[in-house]
Structure formats: C-alpha cells, structure tokens
Figure 1: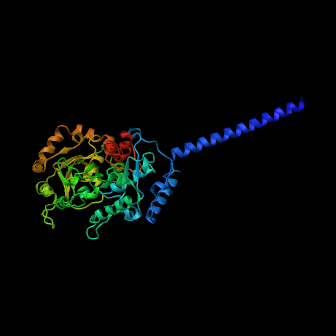
Figure 2: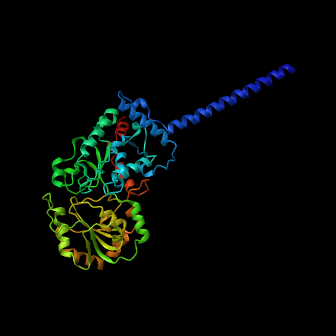
Figure 3: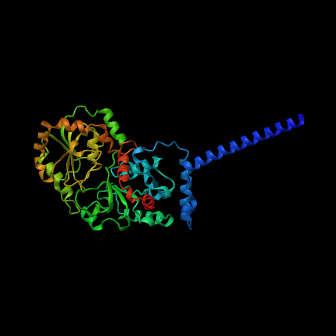
Length: 437
C-alpha cells in the first residue's frame, strides 16, 4: 500500500511539473506574439529586389526599424484614428547632406525639413511597414542650394533631384507604380510651389512636372482662382518661421505689451520697380507704399535688412504683408505669432489652414489697387474694431497653428497638415482595397 501511495505521489508531482512547464510556455508564446504584432518589422522579402540599391534600401529600412523600436512612443492622436504614413529612407544626398548649411533648416522655405522631422518623431502615426501605410512621404530637400551670388535659394535642380528620387523608389518598391504616386506626398515650399520657379510667367510656362501631377503637394503657394501651379492635389501650408525665434522675442516683449509703431514694414521696396529681369517686382505695390507713405509718421518703413526685425513687429499694431514675386510672405506667420495685425495686400491669395485660423477675424485684406487708401483704412480700423481683432489674434491657438515643431504638438502646423491629409484618405490605396472587398 505504501509503495502504491508513493507511486501516486510521484505521478502527482510529475503532473504538476508538466503543468507548470506548459503554463510557462503558453505565457511566453503569448507575450512574444503580442510583441511582434505591435512591433511588426518590415518583411525584407517585400522590398528586396535584385540589385545592390534595393539591398541597401532594405538594410537601411530594417536598421531604422530596430533603432526606432527602442524609443518611447507618444500616444497616437485620437483625431487621426488609425492614419499611417510611411517615410522613405532615401540616400543622404536627397536630404541630410543639405543640412550641413544651417540655413537649410531655418529659412522661410524650411518647412520641407520641418515636416520631415516632425513626421519622423510622430512614432504612432509613422509606420515602418509600407503595406500598412495610407500615405507615403518622400523627403527631398530642394531649397537648400543657396546661390553664391545673392544667397537666395536656387531651385533649378529641383526637378532633376525629385525625378531621381522617384526613379529610385519606383525601382526598389512597388508602391509608387501601383497608384502612379497618388498616395505619395511631397513638400514644395517655394514661390510657385511645384512649378519650381520664382518668376510667375516662367513658373506657368514650366508647369508642374508630369511625374508629380498625381501626387499630393504640400505647398506655400495658393490662390483662390485657377492657376497652373496649383493644378494638382495640394494642401496650402505656412512658410517656415523658427518657433524658438518667436519664443525668444516674446520673452523680451510680451504679446500684450506696448505697441508704439502704428504701421510697420521692413523689406524690399524698389524705387524703380523694374527688376534687372525686366519684371515689375510685387506688381509695383511695394514701390507705391514707399512713394506714398515714406515720411508719414504713422508708417515705419525700412528698406534695409535687420536681423532683429522681430523686435519691431512685436512693437507694431499693423504689419503690412504685400506680395513679392509670389502672393505669400513669411510676414504673415511672423505678424500673427507676434501679435501684429496682418494687413494682407495680395489679390486672390489662398491662406493656410482656414479651419483653424479664421483669417477674416484676425487680419485685414486690402486690394492691391487700394494701397493709396491704406492710411485712411487703418485709421478707421484703429478707431472701431481693433480691440476685437487683437483679442482674436492673441488667442495662442492661432499662432500655434502656423508654427512647425520638431515634435508635433496638438494644433500646431504639422497637426493641421495631418488633419488635411486625413480628409484625403480616399486616395489611400490600402483603404480603397478594404472598401472594395
């Protein structure tokens, strides 16, 4: 009997050992499965094709997945639900190499850099599996080729550089070819967007390159009438102003502080507006401002450059924002961010993010032909509804919507871009496949 009892005890002990082993194995399998589902790496077999370029692209992408997996991940903004964006890892000559010049990430065209950085840091919206993506971001910096003659960005190379990038991704990945790029995103933060020329007539003649006509363009250029340089799916974005420069200025001079300049403008105002190119700069609007109001005590007009000009904006009540070669101007963003009422003088301009920035409530629009009436118009506003306009303008959410941050914040310019893209999900190949099933 004792022998039988001992045998049963031995069997019972063996059963419990076996049971614990099965339980441990089950939990391990469960946690491993959960990890790989939530941190799914890009299957290299999906992107690997013959040739060394493809192997390099796959390796870089795989290494990027592994490095990023260890970073902390901010919560995915509920407003964008399950929106996913894939960012192509292009060779450095398309983007990072240009950053050797510090101006590349700080000048008025630098939204191409800022948006790339913000998307790279928005981990839950970014996917490393392109088969999960709604949109594909192509990070090519074309605004950092600064002229050695005048220091301005020279964008004559833009078409060939972007064309080369498209050739690269279409050769190594299947995603461009399946939609002809309709779910791919580019930034064109130049005078006339993806027409890539500073002079309007030349921009119109050149038009948007055929290889970009199916894609989504994030561009600073926008007008509310038909124009060849916006004859493409696009989102109008603000020009880039470094947010830290705004913060530094406001630390010294609060938004609601003393504003002892009634009307301010600093910038190019040609006495003889016919440029060496034979074109009239800014349709002669700035020249008219100078001729009529230089010497007028209400107007503080300066034609020379001054690095500390933001300190003048924050002291001003009205800031003139006349057109230059193109309708838009960085003064729009700087004026709003520093609490100076923008006076927009650019007929037909389309302004960025109208759902977030109620432009009619925070700014004034003056027709180009009415520049001669500026004095009377601004005097009238100052005596009537200026306080209402300033109250609307000084709402922190307004300036936030026009500034790009390296790490996206709720309501900032990158957030507004994503909201605009979310409304274009009908262009997502992944979504169209799901809806058709």
